[in-house]
Amino acid sequence: MARGRALGQRAACFWALLACAALQAQPLPPATTYGQSLYRTDDTRSAWRPFRPVLPDTGNSAGALEQHIERQEGAVGPFSPTLLEPLQELGIARFTQGDFHGAGAAWSRALHLVRVNEGLRSPAQRWLLEQLSESSLASGQIGQADAHQKRLFALARTQWRPTEPAMQEAAARYADWLRGAYLAGIDRERYARLVALLGLFDNLIADAEKDAGSDSRALLPYLRGRLDAAYLLTVYPGESRNVSHADAGTDPGEGSLDLIRFLELRGDAFREGERTAARIQAILAADASADETERADALLAQADWYQWHRRVAQSLPLYEEAWAQAGDANATWRRERFGTPLELPPGIVFQPGRLPLRERSDAEVRLRFGVSRQGRVQDVAWAQAALPDEPVQALALALLDALRFRPRLEAGRAVDTPAIERSYHMRY
Image (cartoon, rainbow, N blue to C red):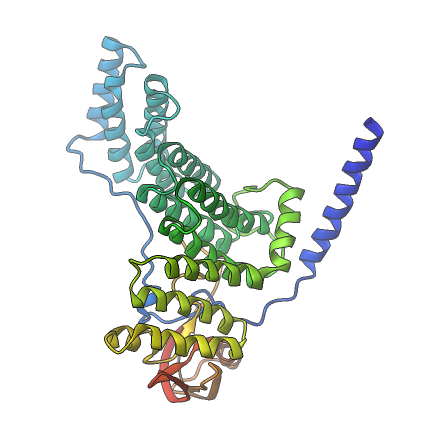
């Protein structure tokens, strides 16, 4: 039996090595990751606002609070729950002064007090974990911040059912953290972060189905988040052993099992997104309370997915169907979605999160171009007097050419759009 286990372990290692080689061999994808490589500051869809917990005001100085805590300890002991509030205030005072390490120490002690007095599942930990993550980020301790975020989400899972709005909000925050950590490349092996992100939504979807059924609207936030994660999966750039400036040495995955799961997801990336978008449509089609624009947006999400993959024969009929679904009464919706060509993917899929990207340069370019009814860029020209250096020009044109666009619709039909003039910021 021992010999069999050893053979099994060797076989697993062999397949893991082959899988690693496959990851290293992945070619760079042709798509421009809009929001990361190239982005418009005037695109309202990209108005990303990270969640940052707000610190309340404290009227006491750090020194006065330290003295107060010392007196309290002498009177009631070091584990008294009455120390919790002054310790929280001490963390705030130190953080405000720029003493991030000291703030983290105060909040860590407060967290220990909560666990001693209220147990490991106390909701009072939430605020403290949020602040500990902020102090770790501010002091450059990315690994610690990542660990606090993971614990924060685990706590949320013990507090709320997956169908509750509070759980949906907590999941959205943690997913945004995972997304930002993936884009920043803080892990030694990036694929594990994508597996964790997709697994988060898969687990929540499965639990929400048990609670509310497979056609419940409670699944929609998780399905939409999963569709965004699928966009990340389609342009996975391969692994690199280069350590980034923000490397936390984190390992969110389960080693070779995560690698095998990732290869399954990567190999079926198109279908992953297609099936997820189809489920969103099915839930809204079965929901009598859904209005025309909700159903139209669901069609639009599937059309954008096809357009992202340059499957124009599938995307254009769906764009036109979404226009018709919205109806004449929703002219504003039609104008916002189809009044001008829009870069894909929609939203903030590739926008950097709280963590900085690898070191990059940034340039602003202004270009004039057309977008065909198929969503392809054409007739590109510079629309600025002072041109950037030739390498920057070449890169900007290549990035623009690789963009996927949702085409403009006129009277419900996709049409060519000539002579668009837009400014882009370019990271390179």
